[in-house]
Image (tube, rainbow over all chains, first blue to last red; front, side):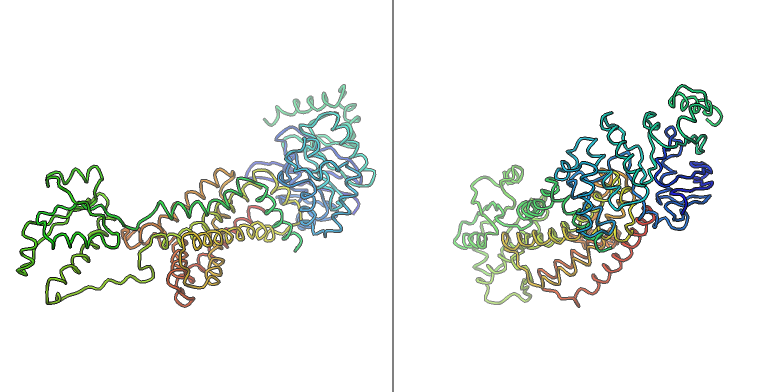
Length: 246
Length: 365
């Protein structure tokens, strides 16, 4: 497997609606890849296909070396996923949530507790392990969700707007954690609406109406479109294209 | 996948036991229902208020009145008011029945001439009227025996089996057992699954390699256990507090409860498939419970329903379980006596559960 993610003309149609329309991209190991696009552009559908939650209606590709069409269940063992919405159990403490997901991934007690020790050090979990997670501040919850996504030592993690509703200080810390993970060789596939976060990515793609309309290093894209910054480039690109389809 | 299954079950129990309202629902509901049905829904007829209009005032007429007060079926009130006021006492509910003894009662009795007495009752309470009239017929029959040398040609001997005092609580407790098991499992199952969908935890679970059937079984086992726990609470309270007799085998009852459970679990699963919020799921579960209770023969015998309605009751799985619980607890029925009900429950269990499970795995895949 030469790339962490490699897809070719991947499509998902719902009836006559083309939610994702022949997108192709490759992501290298250890790369932080920003998957950008306006709301409704098809990002969520694309991520669901990459995570093995939804079968594509056309195209092909591999995630962590597994075929998207034929081995969606195998993909699930190799990836971590964290969604924009906090989706852990509020009644359970941090540790109980981690224990539960560990058991779901088939880990035994000893494996889980040694993994908790590692993640506690890396993500500063010590204060949230013994509190019921509905009582945690948003930033802490996201840290817990990231710990769950990393629990089974996946090679790739998919983060769907991981920093929504979180303060700037926490966002900065969160991104420095992601950099550390990248250093360790973990591939990060992230969506965001914050353009400063997009600048932290190694490469980004911009999706519009089911297609990838632009892809490259953030500053190359800014230069190519003769924009002042990424935000201006993004808005300019979407406005320019918006009239054609809508 | 054993870890995943145990993990799911443990998680589900932690969630239930950390939720105070859920705990109240699970542990107080059986007790409160038992007390309500045991005391409020009392269909025994006792202490019927009986106005006595005795125009004979003989020792014979007094003896008859005396006989009515035996066994506490009637509370006779000797009245001095005029006969035309009889209805007033019905209207202000101070009496349920009236007996009129004519002035020639003892005279005719002596001459062996068959005197007539009148029994007038308040039909607005149909149940107590029917039962009270029956009691009175028995009392009068045994009273006349003392005055006629010849036994009447046709005699009825009344024998009530299994529940000779016709205690309604004996009849209610088995009904509550069936009702609780149905309501708790349908409600908790449908809501617990829909909640995961609502909160987003189901999505998080689906990106894990957990197998669909492990997820399904792990979600259902906790509620099956809670349902059986409900039965234990209701039965213990019923036997200890109301002293309801338990004639048959408790083990058979639990085994068949386990068999029956598959159906309400399947129905709860079905509701979770067709709804997207806990509120909707709750409403579906509530509507189903009302249908199931009313057509189960809990309050009114199925044989009293119109024929087309009797056919509809065959669709209600709880109806068969109700028969099973009553037969085991009150009559000491054994498995061979219940072949038909068990057969129907196996059929419903397999068909309803597999349809719902199929739909569940389609929707989650």
